Image (tube, rainbow, N blue to C red):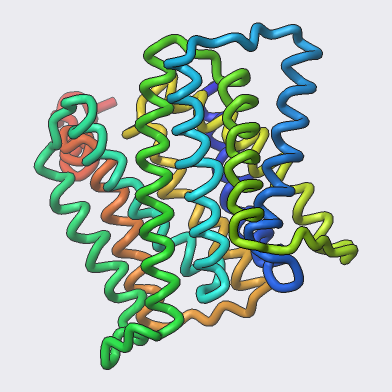
Amino acid sequence: MQNTLLYLITVLIWGSTWIAIEFQLGEVAVEASLLYRFALSALLMWLFCWWRRLPMRFSAKDHGFIALLAVLNFALNYLLIYQAQQHLTSAMAAIAFTTMLLMNIINTRLFFGKPVAKRIYFGALMGIVGIAVLFYPDLDGLDLTNASLIGLVLVLGSALSASLGNMVSVRNSRAGLPIMQVNAWGMLYGSVALTLLVWLSGTPFTFSSNPVYIASLLYLAVFGSVIAFATYFALLKRMGPEKASYVIVLFPLVAVVLSTLFEDFVWTGYTFAGFALVLAGNALVLTPFAKIKALLFKPKLPVQAMLP
């Protein structure tokens, strides 16, 4: 029951953050918006840890891994996502981001020696074909300046960064590091990294007084960062990266519905086919073959058992 609640919270929040990011783009530079988001998240996390009087001291080695988690999951990942959504609708970005599922499985094999089941190759192939079908209308001529292709490359880079961050999170959990304190330090380190990026790139520290911008910023900071990362990392710790990755299959459903309602996202035959292949491929990757076989070939009850 607790795992189900964690799944529900994570899926609903992260599925809706894709549309919230759209309201962050435009007037304020992406780097500055991200800095405001994670600086606010870090402040809230530290206040919570102080209120609960949680121990905040870690070894230098652990701080190194926390900083690595911050750069991968709280800085680079979102920097690429925000940039990608300047070229893609939130629905397309969310669907393409599901490639993180395959990356999680491959990286779990590389870093932790977990074997890869044969069904995963078929599921991965379906997912790749699905992405190709989804973006097929933009592949004509293979124009590398095509906005959709640029967005796709950025999303794939974001997914890789997030997947590597997941591996660091698994390492931190295996080392016994508590989730809330790690997230507090991580968001602080992420804010420092983003501050350096803004300063070195000469990006102006502008801010928008638009109520929509402020509301989406607060939603992304409180729900999208503080709450969703806490629930997702809890799933990683309790169930491992493969099972926790089910959220990646589900949150695009929320993102696509919201994009259809608020961005006038247009469904085409390519959209239906590509989305279906991606979801089916992800479900195949995450579902053990024995369970698939049991669902498809349910044993028939003997005649005697059916008699009254």
